[in-house]
Image (cartoon, rainbow, N blue to C red; front, side, top):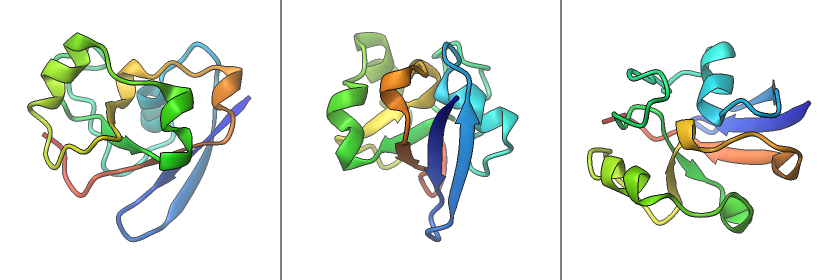
Length: 106
């Protein structure tokens, strides 16, 4: 299992275990992570699963696709580390991934 840590606005860290092949969003939903709404269920048609990839992980995770960049236009407080968690596939290379949950979703 791949470990993913979700950091809340208050600094609370919620550690989860994710199945390879799932998405970070699916992992968040299955673990009841506050702040990840995922209205579209992972279809990349909303911005309610927005996260900030921790600086130590941005290179490993990589950047958003063009479609994802378009959807990030609807997110609040977009930063260079912004990603839609529905577009990040869990794999062995992401073991230990840390993402930060924004204060609100789009």
